[in-house]
Length: 81
Image 1 (cartoon, helix red, strand yellow):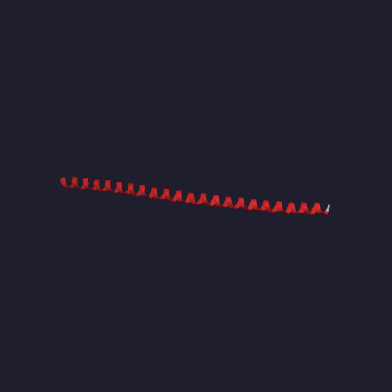
Image 2 (cartoon, rainbow, N blue to C red; image 1 turned 30 degrees about the vertical axis):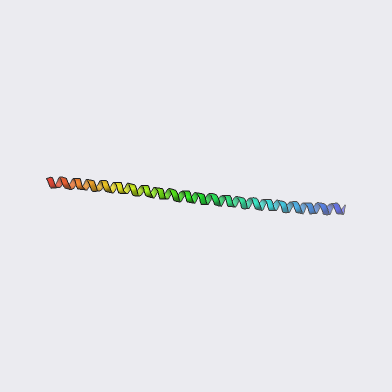
């Protein structure tokens, strides 16, 4: 009976060690997955911000060109009067 108990305790210890190893591995894998998603999201956000900045700069450039044209037209109208 003592031998059976020792075997059972050994099996229990091995099972607990194996379960802990599986849990630790799963936790590490989950942490790595979360980090990858965070990194990917950061890259996506940076790309979106850069694109928004380019579009904003283009819009400002167009608005400045239109304002310049309007000022020229206004100036020409004043000269003719």
